[in-house]
Image 1 (cartoon, rainbow, N blue to C red):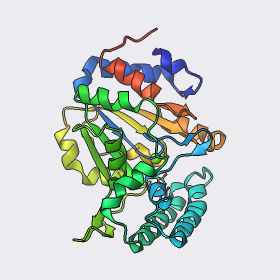
Image 2 (cartoon, protein in one colour; image 1 turned 45 degrees about the vertical axis):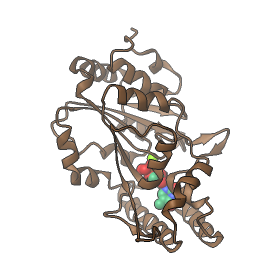
Image 3 (cartoon, rainbow, N blue to C red; image 1 turned 60 degrees about the vertical axis):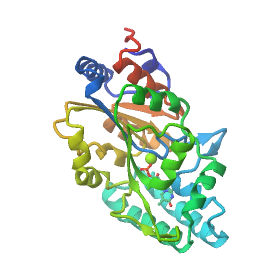
Length: 293
Ligand code: TMP
Ligand code: MG
């Protein structure tokens, strides 16, 4: 077993199964692997020095592009809907319409703000957005080994691209499915493009984008990274999947949610702000480091 899997933050329902999946992936070779990852609170940090880090939406909420009245409204929405998002006592069926309501209301408010495209880069620069420790190795290593990375996010595509661009890791092997802003000819936000992606419809998004997965048909081994139970369906567009290893970050409400995460993710990382475990797995899969038994 990889040494990193014995870290105290690592929980697994069935370590043998993890071992078996890893072994068949290694056998198949890293040229059969693709990575599918959520963005907010998966590639980015949940907290730093005890302070919450922003999601894509929060980067805008906290920015100079938003009036104080609008900021107040967005905070109220966050305070109302975030506890619902992480409430393990409610079913997905119950939460889904409420999440659609959250995203719809937030986007309506943002569109009223006449946000300028040319100011997004400075807003990201001035924000507290932070990719998880080890991001450089993750992105660079995937690029060096030509392993495709799909970032599948219910956040805002324009913002997340800027975060990874400014971190210097927006390599050509990275593809993004997300909510993209639609600007008018003078560069002012007028709407969001296409179908809304929220935390519980990633499956539909995956199935609608079969063209992308079609190109990756020779990569039936998937490493999936997420932080929400809605992230588990991000790989549903992958045809003829052979193996999938699901790694879940459990950032908040740990005790209440641990069992459901253990039941659905193969590896659960509890309050782990780093990418150490995914990186160790990638190094193992690309033959850079042997498994230690
Ligand atoms: P994702 O992690 O699946 O990409 O989802 C985006 C996150 O964005 C989700 O955890 C909820 C959060 N969010 C906000 O912080 N503010 C908002 O206004 C909205 C709509 C979502
Ligand atoms: Mg997330």
